[in-house]
Length: 73
Image (cartoon, rainbow, N blue to C red; front, side, top):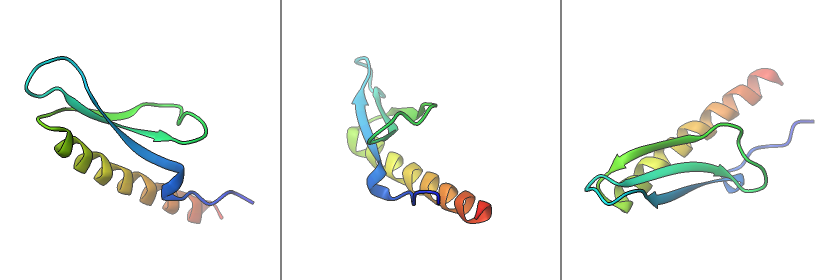
């Protein structure tokens, strides 16, 4: 049986890289093990904007995982 992926298994990290005006980025991470690839985006003007974009990407990522899980079941 394949474990069910939940929102609690993944989270968004917002970081600041460099000192320019668009220096904030987000990255998706898994709580227990690395995902295997980096899922991230940069170039945001504020940490809040990066967080909103990261949470949107996380929702899309989880939706894709649930579709993949249901099609392989």
